[in-house]
Length: 199
Length: 246
Image (cartoon, rainbow over all chains, first blue to last red; front, top):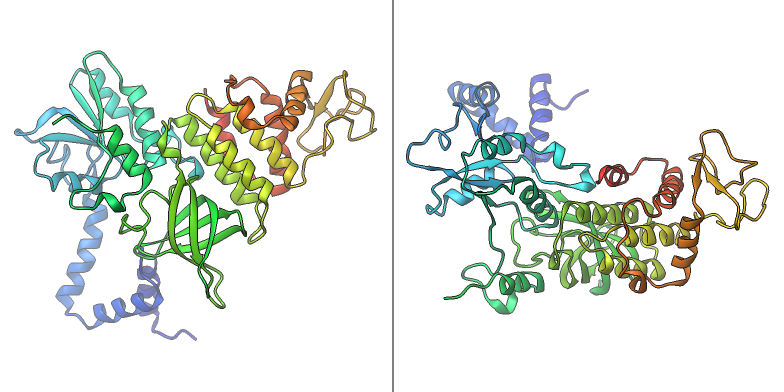
């Protein structure tokens, strides 16, 4: 016999599927939802339903959006000829935090990962190439992660993107601001020396 | 439990809980060891780039009573694949080395010869020059794990193959002479067999200057992958990706 009534057991099972949620946490969340007001529970259910019903990928940059093209691609104040390529939509928030970048984005939705059988054909590259071929881009910034997979993706993209009149750049790798050189690992130190600039 | 240390190669890492990583290492002292690197996903301060696949590290870890997974204390980078260019072909080759080791190594069983082979091959595996080190690795790996048949004689009749044609088949345990070959067998060229013999008596560093095209010793690599996949009873993900490389 189940420990909980069927609807409760079903909700716990569904919550357990979320990342970072184990059986105990799922139980706690389910009881919290049960104890919350009808309005709150309804709002949560609606939010979950809407995220699937209303969100889609931007046809220009593959960012997750509720309007197509997304707010970045349709912005009148952004430089549409400067494109920053990122692995995931969540990476955009990190770049936006700088408040310095005024270009647009292209989201790959992953990176080349041979161990997981993910090759270049699995990444969303075709609409980026279309933008470049249409002469809409002056510079592409490759902002994939500085990991083996991210580097392989950046090198692959740079080979595919290279066109006359299109500048392809890679974000810098090095010592994080506010940290201590003494604690930097060898690879980070090497990369920061390679990427040094004149002041 | 005292802290242990060993040279190690990072094979794979998987996200675990909110911020931890479950990492598989090939250690020199104890073979394949799996452990948890706490907060490795959230904070890069403690581990930096040391948990990237195929990084050679000095690993400090602790075994916990009645627990299968070790606690990863820290890693010092000895050599990283990120110090030189990583193109797509090299990324696939690195992934292939990691997949083979992860699939073939038993847990907690030291294999010093295989460890030395791995470190030496990783040093030779450069962008634009992957085929020689990969062939070398596959050949020696197959031998060191005990799956490599005698390449100089027919597996069916025992006839010496030196100087005569040799064939292989996905379901055969070794090379076959023209008289015993199975239907749909492939031929292994005398050049590839000579290269295999050369690789058995030459260190990888000595051969590292040679840049092989993909076609060189392709039949030998196919033969070796067939052997390994038959013993693993599964297809290797990275083998098909290597096949597709231009």
